[in-house]
Image (tube, rainbow, N blue to C red; front, side, top):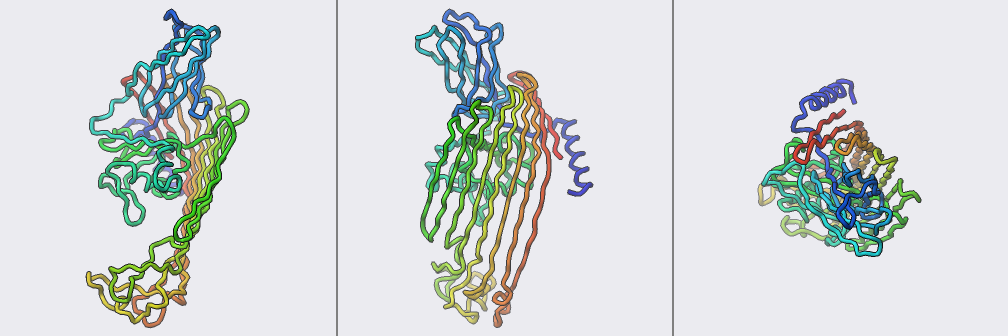
Length: 460
């Protein structure tokens, strides 16, 4: 990155910090608060209270105050297990859902040992009231697996399959409410910068999603300038008991896709890990370009000539809960694809009318490529992100997230066959380039009250 670009980015970041304007980086944090009482309704002090993930990993823990009160903030939106294990009382456990930017109030009534546990969630309210035009769609991994393609679905197709108003473009783009790719992605509470965000949908696999939220409509100002939709993604984390899966999918056009996943935690539960790897191969990576015969372009052919595609993707996540105030996460994912550019079968000749005359729609003639032409493309996208979340108090926290993004594209031509004689429109194109992006995003959040939230951030 050039020095001038760094200086400009730093100035913009400091300006945003000073103004605390609409472009402050939004998060996915909510909270749980409540009171612990005994069977007579008397407050229980110093009762151990824990918040666990659905896999049993400890997220935060505290003890109730002298008046029995407790509070957990920040908590990424989703479902949690609230556990209270106080001496002389039966263990208490309940499932509590935390909404994005909201708080859940839980009254914990402990019972004497041997009595049946009673669960009561008192209320749920938003820290910042969303406008009436805001709508959101929440998707968990179980719902993803029930879709026709299951874990093999791409993120753009997942959005168009589950989000009202989302449609796909001819090149895999996602349009929501008519906006051209104007989508903001967040991964585990950190907003992706514009450059990684542009390729995130193609590089990240939904098989690594634990749950996600898609916000559309009148998106609140805190989310900045990408107003088509906000996609909050919470990635998977390893369960308490180590384990994994191995699967193989096979379908049309010799499409094969083996996948392996594995995750777990250490004995204390402070370190959780999750990883996945996938390979795929198909004999028809792109739609074949040729018509069914040499005259009518509306009659599509079915032959796949020089049309193989292979690729692989990997994902890794490490979560370390150093103490009740500090959590460190490392997230990395990579995708690589090699795709052959389809050719016309040998039955087509450069003298055919479709290669020499404008078609019936007035468009230029098709460009003839012999069956033995060897044009292909390789695309690589890698992303690495480190996150430090530091809880300053039960109402404030700081988040620091440096990142690295690598992109590579290589288009290999075949001049000997691209530039076949007798075809005046023939071209031969070559490209090879890569880009390295380094950056850091940091934000501070203060939950002033249940009705007021203050946020400020910088980006380098």
